[in-house]
Image 1 (cartoon, rainbow, N blue to C red):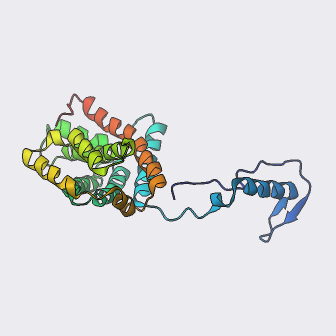
Image 2 (tube, one colour; image 1 turned 90 degrees about the vertical axis):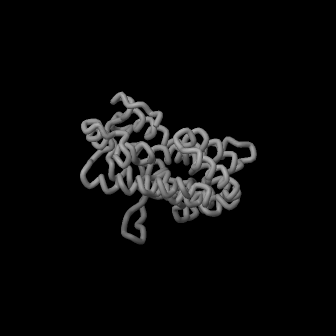
Image 3 (cartoon, rainbow, N blue to C red; image 1 turned 180 degrees about the vertical axis):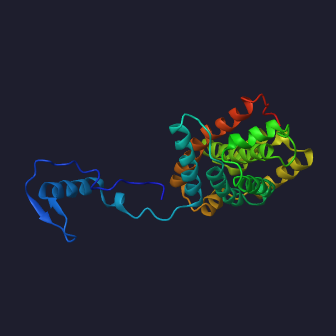
Length: 255
């Protein structure tokens, strides 16, 4: 699942000088030197390296989706992010909110609604930049229900999950309650009413245990660390990109 291995044949050095060949069952021809090299590579790697990687997990699927967006950002020098694939990746994160249980149900509901709004908008707008430009032109960036405001809230949800994972991995006892409480206080609490903050605080006691979280995400200690770090690393440039869209248009981020 989390660990991917290259084909043993692709890792085998090419032997251009070989003249000894044999036919395979498919009719292809392979040199005896290539066959011996492949066998040696298999022996060095060990059988564990070639086990079936298994089905994708919710966390690995999310990491894959955002890594593709980050790769496109890097290849284009931080140019426009396409709205449709961005929404498709964001929609997968709702499953991760669900794994946190009732404590973050409010965040899941709000997040899903905002992603759905942006998904519908992707039929008319090609990039994240285009929806922000539209609202800037119509002076509706911070208007309730505007696409720019919804994008801001989706970005907040992505950041919240990223910080939960960061705190979870950096904590000595890897307490989910501490990780989630710290992340919420930093990312969301400054923008929520007293009533919402109080409800969230009470809900923290209903968070799943560390073991329950891993089970819900279909991960174990080792794979969870790998996939959480993949998500964190993929999200960092995307969050910076979204923030810069607002900053470059003289829009503050404190809302």
